[in-house]
Image (cartoon, rainbow, N blue to C red; front, side):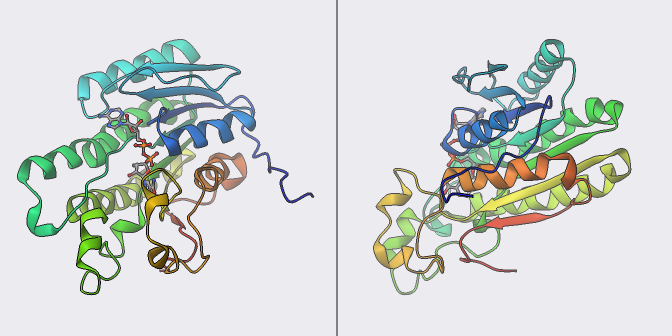
Length: 255
Ligand SMILES: NC(=O)c1ccc[n+]([C@@H]2O[C@H](COP(=O)([O-])OP(=O)(O)OC[C@H]3O[C@@H](n4cnc5c(N)ncnc54)[C@H](O)[C@@H]3O)[C@@H](O)[C@H]2O)c1
């Protein structure tokens, strides 16, 4: 195999709904899954661009219970089934614990935790009826490591580090994934989370070199490295992997 060959994870014929489908990670996931033969439904605040093949875009505010219901109804009407749900919609929140307003706490939790809960719950009935399903939630290393690796050394770094509102919502995502995994395991449905570390984006590429050097792999992650982990979890072969939080972080945090 040549170094730049891409492994094709076989998702032939599967219908996958990817939220945050206009975002960096959502698009990388969608492209990976489409390459594996999945039919893609992409949802975001505005209608996402499709990824070719049998893919469609849907506009929905995923923090809104009514929008989530309408979205799932539309996807089921268009495709007739739902095999995979990947929840990559989310917002970032930065700054010190002390500075988090209640409005900011609620803004972050409304999409990063409540939005995931709503989408996960909506996926249960169709997946149970099929006796098959794959749910992959996008968590974060910031649910595990307390945020900024060393605020006592570099106080200014705190302004650009993820904060406790974000970390707590993501920790909630990790926890609800485990509950879901247990409840659904006997129905042929797996529920896992992928917890990325810093992934290369306009924001993270501005990270100082010293911060990047704290990542044992010595670099930022690529969106497709998250996509590949998600795609594999959605394969039929990953049927016995459930309730797992898979770190994709170059060794930044190990547990
Ligand atoms: N980029 C990273 O380094 C990183 C690291 C760890 C975890 N994550 C997580 O990965 C996920 C994707 O992040 P990303 O880097 O692709 O960010 P992104 O901002 O590029 O994409 C997020 C997408 O979610 C959408 N979104 C936000 N609120 C929404 C709502 N209410 N309804 C519908 N869509 C909504 C946005 O419009 C955007 O397209 C997020 O959950 C993020 O927390 C990212």
